[in-house]
Image (cartoon, rainbow, N blue to C red; front, top):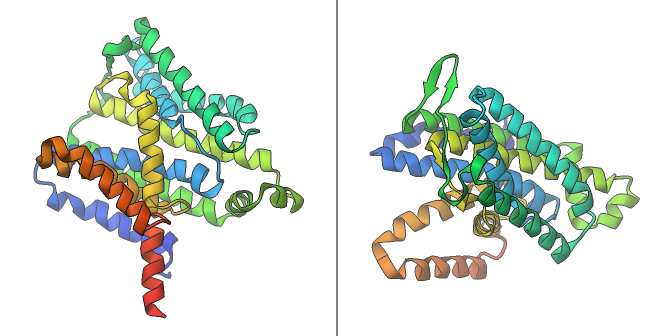
Length: 313
């Protein structure tokens, strides 16, 4: 086993970080922050497959995240479904929706595609806010605890391991997908869709498939967030959350699975660390983003790897 390859060494390093990180988490607050990092990283790993590898921009992924959260919440709180069944049904429903809307949307390119995905996210956000009898409207709604075999899964420490395990699985799936023929087809699409089609690649099928997979990642993360937090509001369904997710992917490095994880971790942790600056917090946050894009234009991790390789020569 070659530990220097991303599929083995990188995955082993991520597993080690997840395993030993609790030694540095001094209280439940930092466990909560670590869980939020994991949730964002799961979404970003899927979004990176769509944006970084397939080259298809999405400004509406918070919508899929919200559908996952509210789908599980409504089925368990309003209709009494078992949480596991609600999560499975919600994930399947989001996958079907992504399949149905993805076919016409993914025929678009560039800023037209961006506007279409933005419109989809806005529609989902409006539905969540206006259907107050189901979703609680702007005030949000309570979500029952996730129960499995009669046992309630509660507490920051337990959810840390659940989210960590799902993140590890998401990264493993992404790495294997990238190295598969389907992953090579995605990279070809990113380079030149016309060239990929000439080579015999079914561009529509490849784009639609990765769109559905990235939506499923977001939905699963949303469902876990709802059951962990025990309460959800429309804030995580809106446009700004979608932009936040895209920023994490770009910051970490597009077409880099571990870059997506690093981007999610950095931009989730940074606001927590900058709270001591009070009114200057967002100014410094923006300056960090600008500096990163100027001096590390490929994204944090790919640029760092490039610099290290250059020094070795």
